[in-house]
Length: 82
Image 1: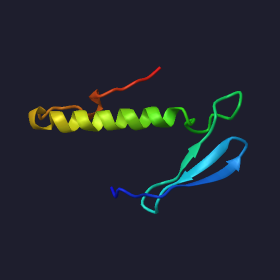
Image 2 (image 1 turned 90 degrees about the vertical axis):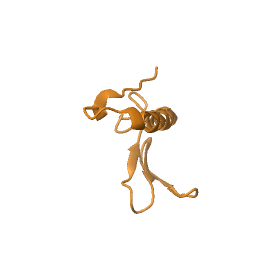
Image 3 (image 1 turned 90 degrees about the horizontal axis):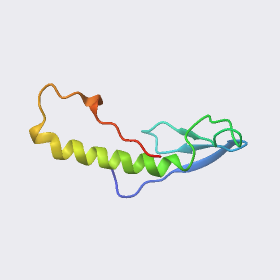
Image 4 (image 1 turned 135 degrees about the vertical axis):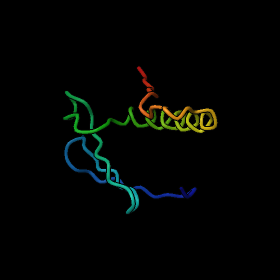
């Protein structure tokens, strides 16, 4: 991924916004949970937690790469936040 990137934010309705990345990635609909919004997508508070969990998960996969067993289940990593 390039160090520079561009995103666009487009208002859809109420508290729903469409986040658009470059042409190679699908758009992401964000929304507020009920009762403020419709809960049609992740809320802004979930996005930083998602980013941190993904980065830590990627680092773990990289660090374990040399010692992973052949029967490694890619679904075994679970991160959660409260």
